[in-house]
Length: 99
Image (cartoon, rainbow, N blue to C red; front, side, top):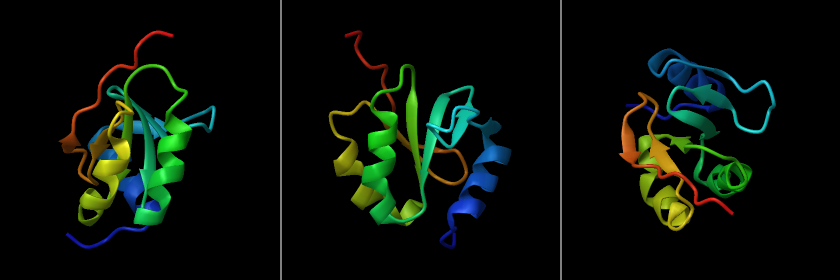
């Protein structure tokens, strides 16, 4: 699959999950699975994870499949899961512990 830019990645996920834009603007999308932040490039992974950290419930990082090896180490210990552009789970998410 070819590399998708940010709008194309959001459009693909909106159709595949299905998902809707986050009205609060904290995450990019809200789906039945939880909130989703989109990182179209490896450089966007860190800031996307930082936006998801304070949120409750399941949190997902959506990436292009080619960025898996850049994204996966950054999600260790965050409980953030990883999705590809088709909505396929590449790494499971876990619920954050209550503070």
